[in-house]
Every structure is written in structure tokens, then in C-alpha cells.
Image (tube, rainbow, N blue to C red):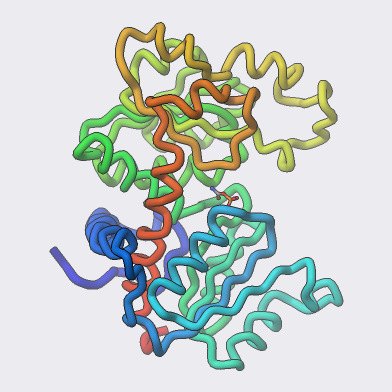
Length: 317
Ligand code: CP
């Protein structure tokens, strides 16, 4: 297996190859073992400083990156757009160049605009990791999802994975499709026709409108929340995409009765945050089918692996 990534940034899963994914998953396995030791820290990145720039809300990704950086002994600074000079009209490039002037080596960024991470990588001199850019990509989420499937099922190749919900507004869906296909899984998307974008048909995935048929087909179901903040003109029952959240739940909500009626055991995943009672009920989210908290645990090891592998590229950007 190779020991270096083919890229200097992690902008999306589309830009990396199968060998890169295998290297990240293998490296994460090593870090997972380390973070389960009594002393969870390694001195690997004592000479590296990382800035976490979050222009959009986050719980899991932000804390997971920060913990991963601290476990690697990197110096960490955190930036939140709500309390920064972005509010006074500073551009993204000026903001980041000012942070880089403080001798920062790597930038982790979440931003509401699709393509923001690619834009930044072309305009500043730093390693960039995309922590989610609008409806575009969320590469570390897809990597931790792939790692979690491998951990649960032994391998990813040949597995049937359905992604259920708001496919149109989901960066998790797009990154998962690229990642799972590169790892040899079969991928299906399932949701209301209004939330399935037309471009999805060009990606070689199966499309299913009927939830029960999708669940009967799959080994793994990755359940997405409705991205209410991204729905145009969403006003409770006046959504352009479905009549009401209650009706969405009746058609696409997962519950334990549904899982028990399948006649086989499937694995349930969710990237979070969960809207309990909408896309999934508590009895399903907290059931033995669910690996939702394992996903969160694996996220730290995956982010350690990504940061560690990219830190080796510090002189090349
Ligand atoms: N999965 C995920 O991106 O969660 P956060 O929005 O809390 O980071």
C-alpha cells in the first residue's frame, strides 16, 4: 500500500482515488487503537498549527476535528464567523490570509457556499480540509461512514447501501456516493421524487421512491435529516417538496416496527444531527441496528488520519 496521498488538500471525495481512501482508512485503524489507550495522545504533529474555521453551525464535525488535532499534539485555534470581523465586511481570502500570517499550517473549513473549499485552496497558501461546503461535499463524513461500514460488515465491496431522505440538499449524500462507489459498494438513493436531484441519474446509483423496497434491497441504510435550513420557502406545511413534515414521516420515517418487519437485519446509520420522530424514531435510532454513535467515535480516528497524512504535504502547497 502507498504511504502518501495523491492530493495536497482534502476538498472532496471526487478528487481522491481508491488508494487514497484505503490509505486513510488504514491509517485511521492505527489511530483508533491509540485513542482507545489510557494515554490517547501522540506527539506526531507538535510542530503543526491548525485553524478551524466554521462559517456554519456544527457540533460533531467541529469537536471531532478539534479533538483529532489535540490527540495529534497540534496547536489549535478556533474561528467562528458569528464573532469575527467577517461581520464587518472582510473577505474570505483576507480573513484566511490574516490567520495564515500567524504561522498557521493547515485550515479546516466549514462554509455554507458549495465550492468554498476549492476556492480557498486556489487563493491561499495553505493545506485546506473541507469540513462541509453547502450542498456540495462533506468528505470526512463519507470517510468515517465507509470506515464504520467496514468495521461492522468486514468490508465495503459488494455491500448494498441506501441513502434515505433529502438527497437534493445533502453534502453527505454526494460524498457518500463517491466514496462508496470507489470502495466497490452498490449505492441506492431513496426519498420523495422532489428531493432527488436530476444529476443523481448520471452518477450510476439506483433510485427508489418506495422506502420498503429500498430497505428490502439494502444491507445498510444511511438516514439523512430533512435540511430544513436549505428548503426554499419552507414554512411548516408550505414546503415546495412535500405537503408537511408529518406526511414525510409517514412515507419515509424509519421506526423499529419497519426494521423488524424486514425479515433480515440491516445496519442503520445517520450522520447527525438527528430530528427524532421525523426521519427516524428513537426506538430505531437507539436500537441494536444502529451504529450512529460508532460513527461519531470513528470520526475522530478518521480526522486524525486525514490531518496526519496531509501534514506531510506542508512544504508542497
Ligand atoms: N454530521 C455532521 O456534519 O454534523 P455537524 O453538523 O454537527 O457537524
